Length: 227
Image 1: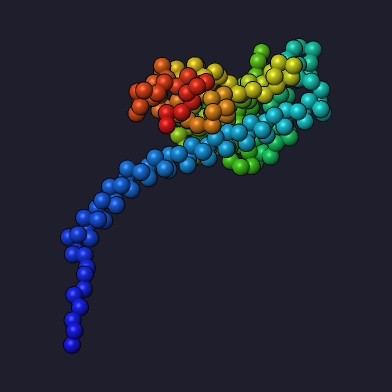
Image 2: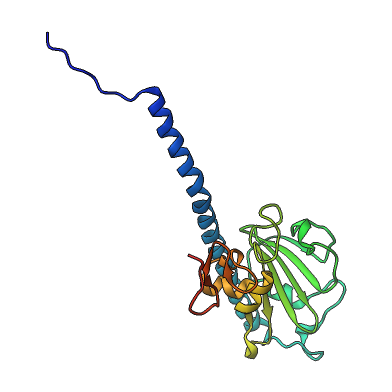
């Protein structure tokens, strides 16, 4: 009877291959997960920007153009009334309203945005994002795209800002410039994320030099990614 020699891997060889695969996975999966997470955050931020713009436009149709002067009904602030916030949020899907209440659970406790302030109105959207509209002489909206119970609750990572100005001056607009974003890495990065669709400013120093690739210097124009 003719015999055939069977070819197989030894246990040692198999363990070596598994070890190599594990090392490769450990090196690549974190970057893949980070990239996927960043893309999801970009989508969230652009979504809330669109929703805010739409709500602002509908509020102006109902209540007239936004004006921030004493003769305007938009400016009728009190200890329990912020017409700018209330009118914009009226046209958004809101699951919880915290108003001006201190520590009501609308924002991450580490953010500093969940305290009591008679000109700051807070709410949570139906899809779980935190909203904080601070309005007096001018108005700003801060958004935690991860909501109060998820994410890091940090400016420039999951908390971003928008300005609210009279419609002729721009209406709802992302806060910040590319240079300020690279320098401070805070709510001034809203403009960067929406326009460049990445978070690579977190991978660069204050001068824009990419930490893992010193040959690339982010400037917001010719260089917008560390890849």
